Length: 263
Ligand code: ADP
Ligand code: MG
Figure 1 (cartoon, rainbow, N blue to C red):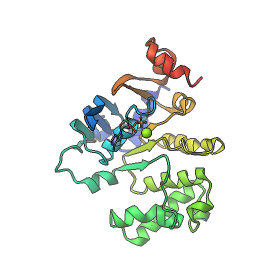
Figure 2: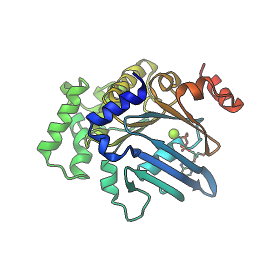
Figure 3: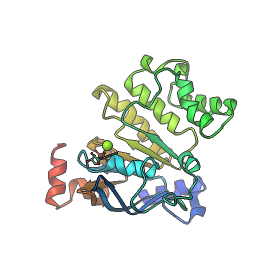
């Protein structure tokens, strides 16, 4: 069975067949400068439904900036970003509604230390999206149950391992059943022993059809789990293809040099 057939089957099951195959995320000519220095120089690519796209590139290449533009934490200088059929770069767009459609996990400091796991997971749903307590608690406990963390609902973050904390952060990001999950180097701050459990959770989400854009330096995972890799270099997209095309078969000397550091 080819990946395409699998994706089509999943799309049909998820009721996604009515969207005409529109990408979940589309970036079109996105530009962003800080203090006169252009970090993103016209970035265009799509993330399709049920796809896991790994966003790769050296430190400072603009991966986080790109993700922040998608999550509306930064404003683009030029270009458009579409989430489904919503132009989220339109100043009239409803930011809270858009954020409810995107789940986000960062490298660290994801959980509030003075709140229990349950409080952390339900906070945004209740305060930002105005869910009633019953609905938020039920959804949170269901998600915690799925990742084997229900027994930790009353625990505080410092009673969890870093890996458990990041898994809780992913659960929180899934509260509103987002169309897109943004993962920005979520294993970079972890003890190497704890990286695996977090990546396993990402792989499980992929199996369930979650659409994911993830910045990562875990090249083995990107190679094995991503449907596509996008390589940023010098503010532009240097490569966009399957892991094999980009990581194994690219003839571009700079691309080969980049991946040689991870062998
Ligand atoms: P990456 O995530 O790939 O490491 P970043 O997006 O964090 O890269 O950073 C890209 C560049 O933009 C870096 O040179 C960084 O210093 C700069 N940058 C990012 N955010 C800001 C900001 N808020 N103000 C000024 N410069 C920034
Ligand atoms: Mg970054």
